[in-house]
Amino acid sequence: KLPTAEYVPLLDGTMNGWNAKTTAAAWKPSDGSMAYSGGNPTTVSTKKDYENFEMYLDWKTSGEAGIAVRSIPQIGLGIEGGSGTLLGNKVNVSKPLLNADNQKGEWNTLYVKVVDDRVTVVLNGQMVTRNVILENSCQPDSPAFIKGKIELMGEGAPVEFRDLYIRELPPTPVYTLS
Image (cartoon, rainbow, N blue to C red):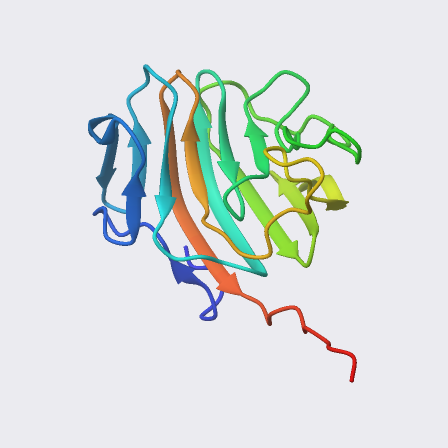
């Protein structure tokens, strides 16, 4: 279910284009999906760095999971208070506008748009995070990275991701003073 021809699938049933950080055996690709069997928290990340982009994906879990954009800022999935929570944000908005999650174990459809230092998240057709500044949770005195990996995060409970499509947007212009 490709959103438009401009979107590229990131899950092809193999680990092509992905790196497992730890416990690689916990991540299993198959037929356009990536599943985490549960256990110790671990991530799988794209080999490619992304700057500005839009992506769609479906996910389901019986517990909690997450997605990191640009390697650090994490979007919580299946968490108390609702998916779309920006778990690294301490200064800017971190809580979603509303809880649009389906029941635990049911498929959810997520849209994420990252442009410049801002993120927008739509879950199951409902805007849950609107144009919020991303923060660098590892180095709070530094801005979020301009580019980075997309990471699928298993937080202990089994989680499955499918139909992950991405469309890169134009890079942020860099101006220099003369």
